[in-house]
Length: 89
Image 1 (cartoon, rainbow, N blue to C red):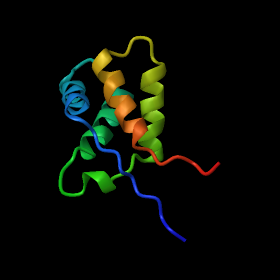
Image 2: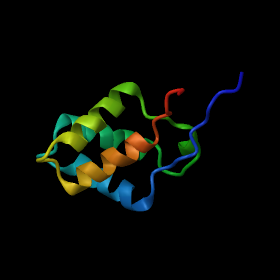
Image 3: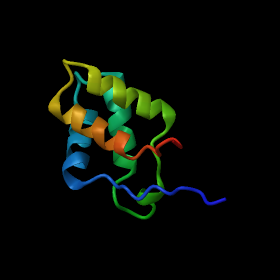
Image 4: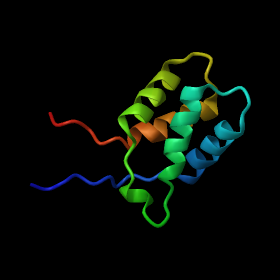
């Protein structure tokens, strides 16, 4: 049985947005969780091997559905969700 590997990494623009969210005083806990997950997956020593956890993916989904979330928060959340391994069909 082969294990799926994550080949996605956080891009420069999404990493910058995630950093902005983490520094924000007004960003929600869910937005910061998603941003932290996205930042751990920046192209570095092992960034491509990192996968978004179930909890971080849930926080990212919550952030994307929040109409009051900032553009930066949604960008970071989208990046984190992209790096979640998809379920078997």
